[in-house]
Length: 312
Image (cartoon, rainbow, N blue to C red; front, side):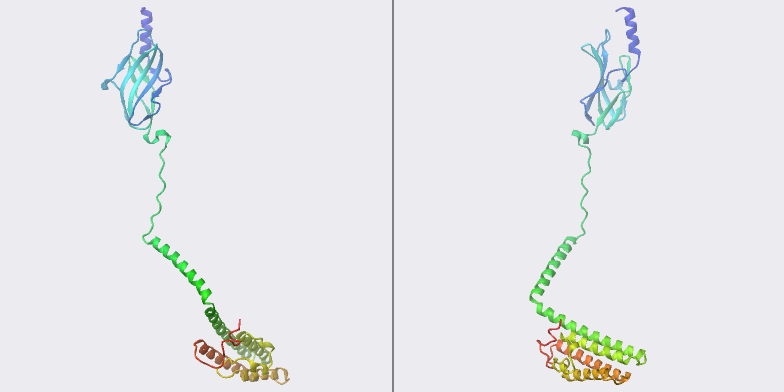
């Protein structure tokens, strides 16, 4: 070899080589996982004259970096081209920068390897499992099933009661209706008495008219008959509403009301107060008689098919 050629070869060998100065480095295999052996190959171009293979495999001569162990470095001449081969084993995932590699008076810097986690094998990224179902308080399922069973039993019992207990429900409904009507009439009488006392009994005619109309309305609601259109004599045909025959009392009561209202005479507060007392006593007897009838005790002549049972 000529001295000039040898001089320029030594100069080239003494200059540091970076990854940018050489070809593009590649991994063998293409994906290196944590803990697996890997190889980084860096093409360097044509082989200089007289250059041969150089191998470094002594651990004392090889560089080291945290998370990566270099086991062998070779400067290979192959088919007229040269390349740098670095065998390594990485123990941390991610991009790891290699330390400067010195071999055959050449220095290689800026080399990097990408190490994949074993959890990323075959493109499967780390995915959290589905959230665990909420913890159930002991006894909750039994309570839920018990409640559902109770609702079903209640609905079934309710339907059975409607189908087979219709008459019973109708009698109970009629009983409560009559008691409600009696109590409502008692409130009406107290309201009329308060109105009579408030004006110093000067509105006795108006109170008497309202008493007659409200009393007949009450009797119509209680018996289911149109009592507002009845005359005094027609009340004799009503079924008895008290333990004693109630027809004579109602006839005399409404006959007296009509005489006072249409007779042209003076209507005094004392007379209206007396009529209010009579109506109140009659309502009290009706309530007592109704309780006796509801208790099933024999009382009077009211029959199950009377007008009371037909009231709506």
